[in-house]
Amino acid sequence: MGYFLTQTLAGGMPSVTSGSNKYGSWQWWDEGILTFTPCQKTDQALLLSVGIHGNETAPVELLMPWVDDLLAGKVSVAWRLMVVLGHPAALTEQKRYLHSDLNRMFGGRWQAFPDSPETQRAQLLEQAVTRFWNEGHEPRRWHLDMHTAIRESYHPRFGVLPFREMPYDPEFLEWLGDAGLEALVFHQKPAGTFSHFSCEHFNASSCTLELGKARRFGENALETFATTQEALYALLAGVTATQTHQPPLYYRVTQQITRTSDNFILHMSDDTRNFTPFTRGTCLAEDGIHQSIVQKETEYVLFPNPNVAPGLRAGLMLAKI
Image (cartoon, rainbow, N blue to C red; front, side, top):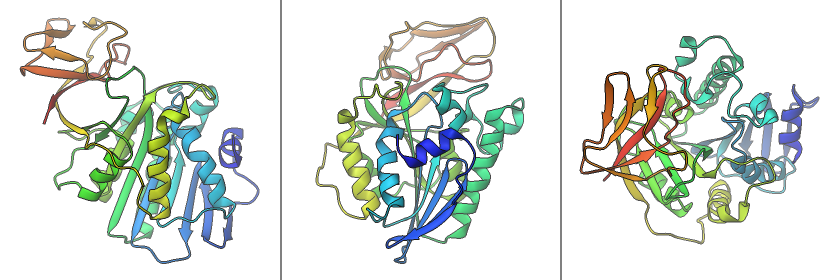
């Protein structure tokens, strides 16, 4: 599994929490939280997070070998860097979460949830990320939060971008395409995701990357993410990826399906894929007397999940831009 991941899943902190090599210095701030400052001065900072959901293991397997090489002085990095293993306790059990969904709690929203390992972790991550962004004054700030989806998708690799008033850095959007993302979804409202926290509070260009379907450690076909891995490693090294791809399709969120009671019914089968189209007038869900209806000529579903707790998102509907 590699040193950083193994040590994190073992719990607690390692005996040595800082060090350096010919490329820079590293600090192990807390459980699953590592920073690296390169020797050469840089005007860019990057936050890489994986494992916010404990059953989403492909991004963890994708990133951890590189992190171990960085600590060993085998690779250099062109950014001031923070690497976060989001939810070590859930990763250990390979469960999405233990009590409540961590990726709904950021921006102080954890205060509205009952105390749990997730609320404590959200608070700790907010503090660590705040410290990381505030320690530098780099004009370029990127946050890549890497996930996998619960369901299969018509676009197996896609990104979800937080709502922001300012336009996104064109180079950021271009890189997402070079990383093999086939679609980009633009939120229209604030949310409680980790990527939104960096975007809203620290003006980072942020994206939640969805890379295939959630599977257990050792069951991921990592070769299907070779394009993403190459682009990521090139980004970290400060060089241009050799592969270029068709620009991704753009979607915007048109409405959110929210479960408000135990009477909630989602009118979609368990095998409905992300980006499945629905035509105007289709009833998507019912919750007592309230119905969610397709308003546009065609809308596409994203993250349909009838099993969320009341008050949480049970799906998003999208329109192509």
